[in-house]
Length: 327
Image (cartoon, rainbow, N blue to C red; front, side):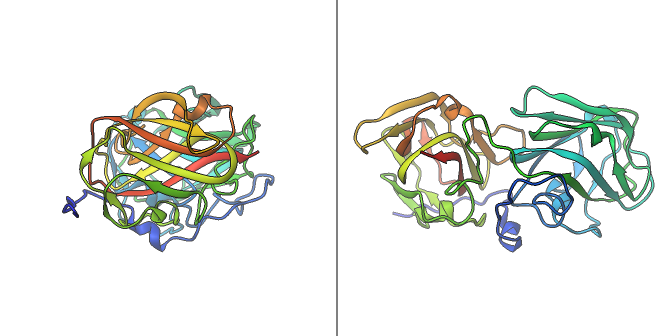
Protein backbone atom coordinates (compact mmCIF):
# COMPACT_ATOMS: atom_id res chain seq x y z
CA UNK A 1 0.00 0.00 0.00
CA UNK A 2 1.35 3.40 -0.98
CA UNK A 3 1.48 5.95 1.83
CA UNK A 4 0.82 9.54 0.81
CA UNK A 5 4.08 11.46 0.90
CA UNK A 6 4.33 14.60 2.96
CA UNK A 7 5.44 17.72 1.16
CA UNK A 8 9.14 18.45 1.56
CA UNK A 9 10.45 21.93 2.36
CA UNK A 10 13.01 21.96 -0.41
CA UNK A 11 14.52 19.48 -2.83
CA UNK A 12 17.40 19.54 -5.26
CA UNK A 13 15.27 19.28 -8.38
CA UNK A 14 17.51 21.85 -10.06
CA UNK A 15 20.21 19.18 -10.27
CA UNK A 16 18.23 17.55 -13.06
CA UNK A 17 19.20 20.50 -15.29
CA UNK A 18 22.91 20.39 -14.49
CA UNK A 19 25.53 18.40 -16.39
CA UNK A 20 26.21 14.75 -15.62
CA UNK A 21 29.13 14.36 -13.25
CA UNK A 22 32.26 13.19 -15.01
CA UNK A 23 35.63 11.86 -13.82
CA UNK A 24 38.75 13.97 -14.29
CA UNK A 25 42.25 12.50 -14.48
CA UNK A 26 44.80 13.82 -11.98
CA UNK A 27 46.13 17.14 -13.26
CA UNK A 28 47.96 20.29 -12.11
CA UNK A 29 45.77 23.07 -10.70
CA UNK A 30 43.77 24.85 -13.41
CA UNK A 31 40.47 26.74 -13.60
CA UNK A 32 39.42 24.40 -16.43
CA UNK A 33 39.82 21.25 -14.29
CA UNK A 34 36.74 19.47 -12.95
CA UNK A 35 35.34 21.60 -10.12
CA UNK A 36 37.08 24.77 -11.30
CA UNK A 37 34.38 26.75 -13.07
CA UNK A 38 31.00 26.34 -14.75
CA UNK A 39 28.07 24.40 -13.30
CA UNK A 40 29.61 22.31 -10.52
CA UNK A 41 26.54 21.51 -8.44
CA UNK A 42 27.14 17.77 -8.93
CA UNK A 43 30.84 18.02 -8.08
CA UNK A 44 30.88 20.24 -4.98
CA UNK A 45 28.63 20.31 -1.93
CA UNK A 46 28.37 23.57 0.01
CA UNK A 47 27.32 24.30 3.58
CA UNK A 48 27.29 27.72 5.20
CA UNK A 49 27.41 29.41 8.58
CA UNK A 50 26.00 32.82 9.37
CA UNK A 51 23.07 34.53 7.66
CA UNK A 52 23.27 34.08 3.89
CA UNK A 53 20.33 34.93 1.65
CA UNK A 54 19.41 32.16 -0.79
CA UNK A 55 20.95 28.79 -1.61
CA UNK A 56 24.77 28.67 -1.62
CA UNK A 57 24.64 26.35 -4.63
CA UNK A 58 24.09 29.50 -6.70
CA UNK A 59 27.79 30.26 -6.13
CA UNK A 60 28.80 27.24 -8.23
CA UNK A 61 26.10 27.17 -10.91
CA UNK A 62 28.24 28.77 -13.62
CA UNK A 63 26.28 32.04 -13.81
CA UNK A 64 27.95 35.42 -13.19
CA UNK A 65 24.67 37.35 -13.33
CA UNK A 66 22.63 35.95 -10.42
CA UNK A 67 20.69 38.52 -8.40
CA UNK A 68 19.10 36.29 -5.76
CA UNK A 69 21.89 35.82 -3.18
CA UNK A 70 23.72 38.08 -0.78
CA UNK A 71 25.39 38.08 2.64
CA UNK A 72 23.25 39.65 5.32
CA UNK A 73 25.03 42.33 7.33
CA UNK A 74 26.76 41.14 10.48
CA UNK A 75 30.06 40.30 12.10
CA UNK A 76 32.28 38.67 9.48
CA UNK A 77 33.60 36.19 12.06
CA UNK A 78 30.12 34.58 12.22
CA UNK A 79 30.24 33.57 8.55
CA UNK A 80 31.79 30.71 6.62
CA UNK A 81 31.37 28.59 3.49
CA UNK A 82 32.53 24.95 3.39
CA UNK A 83 33.17 23.34 0.01
CA UNK A 84 33.08 19.52 0.03
CA UNK A 85 34.94 18.23 -3.05
CA UNK A 86 34.13 14.55 -2.22
CA UNK A 87 37.76 13.54 -2.85
CA UNK A 88 40.97 15.37 -1.92
CA UNK A 89 42.15 18.07 -4.36
CA UNK A 90 44.73 20.81 -4.26
CA UNK A 91 43.45 24.37 -4.76
CA UNK A 92 45.96 27.19 -5.29
CA UNK A 93 43.76 30.18 -6.20
CA UNK A 94 40.13 31.34 -6.25
CA UNK A 95 38.06 34.06 -7.91
CA UNK A 96 35.18 35.65 -5.99
CA UNK A 97 32.43 37.40 -7.95
CA UNK A 98 30.04 39.96 -6.47
CA UNK A 99 27.96 42.65 -8.19
CA UNK A 100 29.68 45.67 -6.63
CA UNK A 101 32.87 46.74 -4.87
CA UNK A 102 31.85 46.58 -1.21
CA UNK A 103 33.88 45.32 1.74
CA UNK A 104 32.84 42.01 3.31
CA UNK A 105 35.47 42.19 6.05
CA UNK A 106 38.56 40.00 6.48
CA UNK A 107 38.65 36.28 5.71
CA UNK A 108 41.00 33.31 5.46
CA UNK A 109 41.10 29.94 3.72
CA UNK A 110 41.36 26.64 5.60
CA UNK A 111 41.64 22.99 4.53
CA UNK A 112 40.59 19.71 6.14
CA UNK A 113 40.15 16.04 5.33
CA UNK A 114 37.55 15.33 8.03
CA UNK A 115 35.60 18.64 8.30
CA UNK A 116 36.67 18.83 11.96
CA UNK A 117 40.40 19.62 12.09
CA UNK A 118 41.22 22.71 10.02
CA UNK A 119 44.58 24.01 8.76
CA UNK A 120 44.99 27.66 7.79
CA UNK A 121 46.12 28.24 4.21
CA UNK A 122 47.95 31.49 3.53
CA UNK A 123 47.19 34.77 5.24
CA UNK A 124 44.12 36.86 6.03
CA UNK A 125 42.73 38.96 3.18
CA UNK A 126 40.04 41.59 2.61
CA UNK A 127 37.06 40.27 0.66
CA UNK A 128 35.00 42.39 -1.72
CA UNK A 129 37.79 44.59 -3.13
CA UNK A 130 36.60 44.09 -6.72
CA UNK A 131 33.70 42.57 -8.64
CA UNK A 132 35.96 39.73 -9.78
CA UNK A 133 38.52 39.34 -7.00
CA UNK A 134 41.39 36.89 -7.51
CA UNK A 135 42.35 35.48 -4.11
CA UNK A 136 46.03 34.59 -4.16
CA UNK A 137 46.53 33.62 -0.51
CA UNK A 138 45.93 30.03 -1.65
CA UNK A 139 49.10 30.15 -3.80
CA UNK A 140 51.14 28.72 -0.93
CA UNK A 141 48.97 25.60 -0.64
CA UNK A 142 50.83 22.35 -1.36
CA UNK A 143 48.38 19.95 0.31
CA UNK A 144 45.31 18.19 -1.04
CA UNK A 145 42.12 18.52 1.02
CA UNK A 146 38.60 17.21 0.62
CA UNK A 147 37.09 20.20 2.45
CA UNK A 148 37.95 23.86 1.96
CA UNK A 149 36.52 26.53 4.24
CA UNK A 150 36.26 30.25 3.55
CA UNK A 151 36.19 31.52 7.13
CA UNK A 152 35.34 35.05 8.25
CA UNK A 153 37.84 36.60 10.67
CA UNK A 154 37.04 40.25 11.43
CA UNK A 155 35.13 43.29 10.25
CA UNK A 156 31.55 43.34 8.98
CA UNK A 157 29.68 41.95 6.00
CA UNK A 158 27.40 43.90 3.66
CA UNK A 159 24.06 42.97 2.10
CA UNK A 160 24.65 45.51 -0.67
CA UNK A 161 26.18 43.45 -3.48
CA UNK A 162 24.83 40.19 -4.88
CA UNK A 163 27.18 37.22 -4.38
CA UNK A 164 27.32 35.56 -7.79
CA UNK A 165 30.03 32.92 -8.15
CA UNK A 166 33.28 31.47 -6.88
CA UNK A 167 35.79 29.64 -9.09
CA UNK A 168 38.82 27.54 -8.17
CA UNK A 169 42.22 26.87 -9.63
CA UNK A 170 42.02 23.19 -8.76
CA UNK A 171 44.10 20.08 -9.34
CA UNK A 172 42.97 16.54 -10.09
CA UNK A 173 41.78 14.33 -7.27
CA UNK A 174 44.30 12.75 -4.89
CA UNK A 175 43.67 9.16 -3.78
CA UNK A 176 43.27 8.21 -0.13
CA UNK A 177 45.90 6.03 1.52
CA UNK A 178 43.91 2.89 0.72
CA UNK A 179 43.13 4.05 -2.83
CA UNK A 180 39.42 4.68 -2.28
CA UNK A 181 37.71 7.43 -4.27
CA UNK A 182 34.15 8.47 -4.95
CA UNK A 183 35.21 8.85 -8.57
CA UNK A 184 36.30 5.21 -8.89
CA UNK A 185 33.90 2.98 -10.88
CA UNK A 186 30.50 2.44 -9.16
CA UNK A 187 31.09 5.34 -6.75
CA UNK A 188 29.07 8.18 -8.28
CA UNK A 189 27.10 9.04 -11.39
CA UNK A 190 24.72 6.87 -13.44
CA UNK A 191 25.37 3.28 -12.33
CA UNK A 192 23.75 -0.13 -12.86
CA UNK A 193 26.21 -1.53 -10.30
CA UNK A 194 25.70 -1.96 -7.40
CA UNK A 195 22.51 -3.95 -7.77
CA UNK A 196 20.21 -2.77 -4.98
CA UNK A 197 17.60 -4.89 -3.17
CA UNK A 198 15.52 -4.32 -0.03
CA UNK A 199 12.93 -6.09 2.09
CA UNK A 200 11.42 -2.73 3.06
CA UNK A 201 8.01 -1.74 1.73
CA UNK A 202 8.43 0.80 -1.08
CA UNK A 203 6.03 3.71 -1.32
CA UNK A 204 7.08 5.28 -4.60
CA UNK A 205 9.65 4.64 -7.34
CA UNK A 206 12.21 1.84 -7.50
CA UNK A 207 15.60 1.14 -5.97
CA UNK A 208 17.58 1.70 -9.18
CA UNK A 209 16.76 5.39 -8.84
CA UNK A 210 19.20 5.59 -5.91
CA UNK A 211 22.12 5.35 -8.36
CA UNK A 212 20.77 7.10 -11.47
CA UNK A 213 22.66 10.41 -11.06
CA UNK A 214 19.42 12.34 -10.59
CA UNK A 215 18.47 14.39 -7.54
CA UNK A 216 14.75 14.60 -8.34
CA UNK A 217 12.02 13.21 -6.05
CA UNK A 218 11.83 9.67 -7.47
CA UNK A 219 11.91 7.21 -4.56
CA UNK A 220 10.70 6.85 -0.99
CA UNK A 221 9.88 3.90 1.31
CA UNK A 222 6.62 3.53 3.21
CA UNK A 223 6.42 4.36 6.91
CA UNK A 224 7.38 1.18 8.79
CA UNK A 225 9.58 -0.17 11.58
CA UNK A 226 13.29 -0.13 10.72
CA UNK A 227 14.24 -3.25 12.75
CA UNK A 228 15.13 -6.16 10.48
CA UNK A 229 14.90 -4.15 7.27
CA UNK A 230 17.82 -3.87 4.90
CA UNK A 231 19.03 -1.96 1.87
CA UNK A 232 21.57 -4.24 0.20
CA UNK A 233 24.18 -3.33 -2.44
CA UNK A 234 25.74 -6.05 -4.63
CA UNK A 235 28.94 -4.79 -6.31
CA UNK A 236 29.39 -8.12 -8.22
CA UNK A 237 33.06 -8.31 -7.19
CA UNK A 238 34.83 -7.54 -3.87
CA UNK A 239 35.28 -3.85 -3.05
CA UNK A 240 36.64 -1.88 -0.12
CA UNK A 241 34.24 0.88 0.93
CA UNK A 242 35.23 3.35 3.64
CA UNK A 243 32.50 6.02 3.25
CA UNK A 244 29.04 6.45 1.76
CA UNK A 245 27.06 9.62 1.07
CA UNK A 246 23.25 9.62 1.09
CA UNK A 247 21.13 12.49 -0.22
CA UNK A 248 17.61 13.14 1.05
CA UNK A 249 14.59 15.29 0.24
CA UNK A 250 14.61 16.63 3.81
CA UNK A 251 16.38 16.01 7.12
CA UNK A 252 13.92 13.63 8.80
CA UNK A 253 15.47 10.80 10.86
CA UNK A 254 14.70 7.34 9.42
CA UNK A 255 15.62 5.00 12.28
CA UNK A 256 18.86 3.51 13.63
CA UNK A 257 20.94 1.31 11.31
CA UNK A 258 24.35 -0.30 10.99
CA UNK A 259 26.61 -1.15 8.06
CA UNK A 260 27.53 -4.77 7.36
CA UNK A 261 29.64 -6.54 4.75
CA UNK A 262 29.55 -10.05 3.32
CA UNK A 263 31.43 -12.15 0.78
CA UNK A 264 28.64 -14.71 0.30
CA UNK A 265 25.36 -12.83 0.94
CA UNK A 266 24.77 -15.07 3.96
CA UNK A 267 27.34 -14.35 6.69
CA UNK A 268 27.48 -10.69 7.65
CA UNK A 269 30.15 -8.71 9.52
CA UNK A 270 29.32 -5.46 11.33
CA UNK A 271 31.27 -2.41 10.16
CA UNK A 272 31.60 0.50 12.56
CA UNK A 273 29.03 1.82 15.04
CA UNK A 274 25.29 2.24 14.51
CA UNK A 275 23.95 5.53 13.14
CA UNK A 276 20.68 7.36 12.53
CA UNK A 277 19.82 7.35 8.84
CA UNK A 278 18.86 10.80 7.63
CA UNK A 279 20.72 12.67 10.36
CA UNK A 280 22.83 15.38 8.74
CA UNK A 281 26.45 16.30 9.35
CA UNK A 282 25.85 20.04 9.01
CA UNK A 283 22.84 22.14 10.00
CA UNK A 284 20.59 22.73 6.99
CA UNK A 285 22.36 20.06 4.94
CA UNK A 286 20.30 17.19 3.56
CA UNK A 287 23.34 15.11 2.78
CA UNK A 288 24.71 12.49 5.18
CA UNK A 289 28.35 11.48 4.87
CA UNK A 290 28.52 8.16 6.70
CA UNK A 291 31.87 8.01 8.49
CA UNK A 292 30.90 4.75 10.25
CA UNK A 293 32.54 2.90 7.36
CA UNK A 294 35.94 4.53 7.85
CA UNK A 295 37.20 1.65 10.02
CA UNK A 296 36.59 -0.87 7.22
CA UNK A 297 39.70 -2.56 5.82
CA UNK A 298 38.05 -5.63 4.25
CA UNK A 299 36.86 -6.24 0.69
CA UNK A 300 33.25 -7.41 0.41
CA UNK A 301 31.05 -8.08 -2.58
CA UNK A 302 27.89 -7.29 -0.62
CA UNK A 303 27.22 -4.32 1.64
CA UNK A 304 24.02 -3.46 3.44
CA UNK A 305 22.55 -1.11 5.99
CA UNK A 306 20.59 -3.21 8.48
CA UNK A 307 17.82 -1.69 10.59
CA UNK A 308 18.09 -1.86 14.39
CA UNK A 309 15.36 0.34 15.84
CA UNK A 310 13.11 3.31 15.24
CA UNK A 311 10.91 3.98 12.23
CA UNK A 312 11.50 4.49 8.53
CA UNK A 313 9.74 7.62 7.31
CA UNK A 314 8.43 8.28 3.81
CA UNK A 315 11.20 10.76 3.08
CA UNK A 316 12.61 10.92 -0.43
CA UNK A 317 16.01 9.25 -0.78
CA UNK A 318 17.55 10.98 -3.80
CA UNK A 319 20.93 9.33 -4.36
CA UNK A 320 23.49 7.03 -2.71
CA UNK A 321 27.24 7.32 -3.41
CA UNK A 322 30.27 5.30 -2.29
CA UNK A 323 33.97 5.97 -1.69
CA UNK A 324 35.48 2.67 -2.80
CA UNK A 325 38.09 0.69 -4.66
CA UNK A 326 37.91 -2.73 -6.34
CA UNK A 327 40.13 -5.57 -5.10
